[in-house]
Image (cartoon, rainbow, N blue to C red; front, side):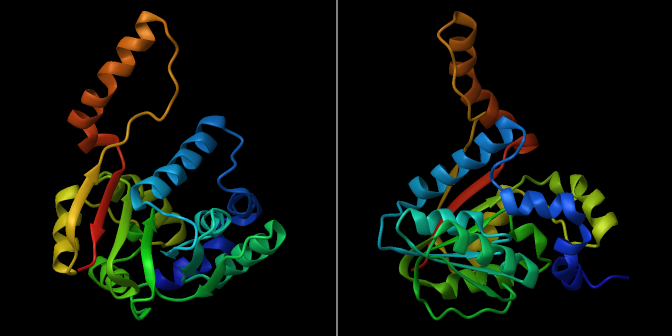
Length: 239
């Protein structure tokens, strides 16, 4: 049986040239809606964490580092960590190409102690790659100064089933959490002021009656059915 952490380390090599090409171009995708969704997500990160130039941000499980690099270009002191050396190599290469003053290091987000250095922390689409969410959230808690905020963005609970293809093919960890479970984990890690945000289809709408009606109805439909398809966005504060 493949060691899950080793599988995460080996993932950039295992996905082949096409997969690595996506890592190097992310968030820009050949599918416009995917690019738009990811760019909108980055805007939500800035807004929800109220990130201003000069603040410091740490991203745990940063992958190829696109959010960390974008954060640096926004004027933040941005530092990303990932367990896979090749991910960090890609992140550093792209930061240099883009002239982004972002820092990247190889580290296990379950064991890192960042000594309360950061104003904000981000776990974007990363927590489900760990089997010890409690340890990852403890790392995030130790990374933050008093009053610092964590933003946790995760697929919904169905990911424990939808991620099986990746687990079977690459041996990586693919967990799935309900919002209730994530809130409980955050409280157990010492966070307070936990707020959930609800996303919708992240699209523009025209002024036809049908489009307007859909725009008005969507927030209610997505909140009612969010258990089944929407991401979970949770912001929490370190005391």
